[in-house]
Image (cartoon, rainbow, N blue to C red; front, side, top):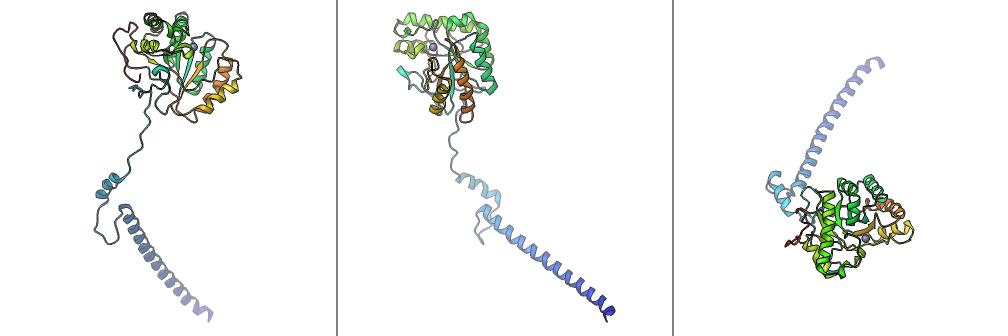
Length: 304
Ligand SMILES: [Zn+2]
């Protein structure tokens, strides 16, 4: 009787479905409960069957057991502008590196009416700030360029009045007068700027010139990487020298004045594109003290 058996079959199907549904619900609940117990035990590292300890009690203890964080890199720029760690690995105790993981690009022999604006524009494109070691007589001639450099957040550095590569051989008073005159030209152009660095032309340091810089509150700023961009090498060689030698803390010597800087500019594009993917590029901290062009009786703080 097919017609009579159909309702009976339907009831059996309904009952079977209901039973299966209950089984699935109960099974799911039990499995979920067990899984939850395991994960909670894992969170608090509570052994099964051990005393019940709330997560609020366990979490602080677990934090105490964590290893200490590795030392964080000390920024060399920022609103508080912390001084750099002391580092005097260069000639006669001059600074060779930033002393931090950050890399510092430095540009010497400006300001130059042709090349300095182009270097500034390129640095702006990459959002990079650097340090400009300026010649005093040029700063006096192009004060607006000094202001442009400062306005872009770069740090100023004294590079002597007339790029005297033998200044280190002269007597202390002559050296002091040269450095003061340059600082006065820089601060006259950009009164808000701090002059906390001196770089000796040619890198021809002497104890007298390092001491004179310190007496005027300036760090003697040497460099780690010199790609000789002022010579006649091709731009790809300048770029390769910098990118291949760059290490954390490196101070890089480049030029925005003193001749045709077209190759430097071309190399700088490659250098910036490469280094910004590997390092944080930062200007040297300009220092927190008031500029003291007279410099009498004041010694710069270590590391600045
Ligand atoms: Zn120079």
